[in-house]
Length: 395
Image (cartoon, rainbow, N blue to C red; front, side, top):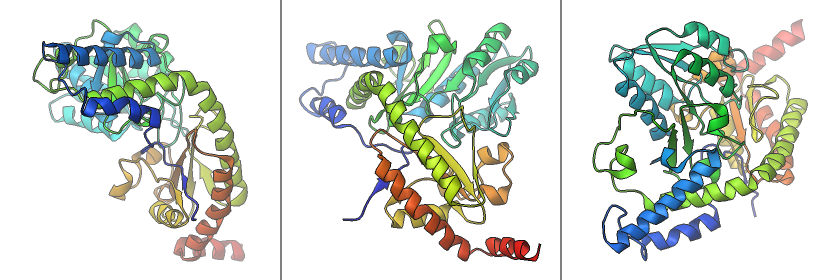
């Protein structure tokens, strides 16, 4: 039987059996609409409220501060557009990091077409944002700042609490995209001091198409989906009850198991990082070497194409990614890697490993056995590598 090693958990995860079992009754036996007034509906509404409390507990929020969404992308859109539209009279300036997810960057660019001003904040070589630089960029008309808690592409964790302090001092709303962190490291919105935080069900091993937005109590937020009174009037449309139940159960399990998961994946990550650097020449670890997600390892490999590397590894039963999961099919140079100063020709060789508790040391051993061979094979066909070897021989 061919070995299969899945190391692309930022893109998708298998839904846990316990989560599936919890969801099943809500596809048929308990199919009522939570907005109806009779007992079938009120029973489902009570179930939804329980799940809201579970998700809130995971991130240290109140249940009434949670809006269920279709995932991290919708949560990011609702945060940025909801604040920018609701507070247009206050100002028209938005600040986002240059390394944000496309759902944040493109939401910000959307407002440029509506005569808002957007500042795309530069980062350092590790992808870190400087809180002092944010303070300098805030203007009287600045209404919103959005900085991801961590990057799914390079793994760097931002000093969110310090940035939140700056925003609070200046009276500016602060949103963080927490998709890469919730489920991978402890997250407490009150300790962080953020006004809004997005999360996705994927890192929790919940169903795809589930997520939530935390918004601080008392915050004014314009809905994107206008309809009924669902989600306290902030998101119209009949609730995805099975998905919400799955997200709630996954949040409950994550809260119990997160410390064990973090210890497990960090050991595997460190083994992977040291093994790759020792066994392959001309490879660069991207992101911060220490202040990064415990189950994240990302590299740029000189003289090869990341897409070709991903394809050839998949033929060996190893599944990884190149760049962000949402951008890799576009075959464009990663804006995140360019923002941290990686030359375009090196950025083309991006490879990203995201680990989960289901991964083992045997998985890492198998990757370290196959990866150097695959890289060597691709480099043997690369004119860029041929030029490098020729230059070395003549020097």
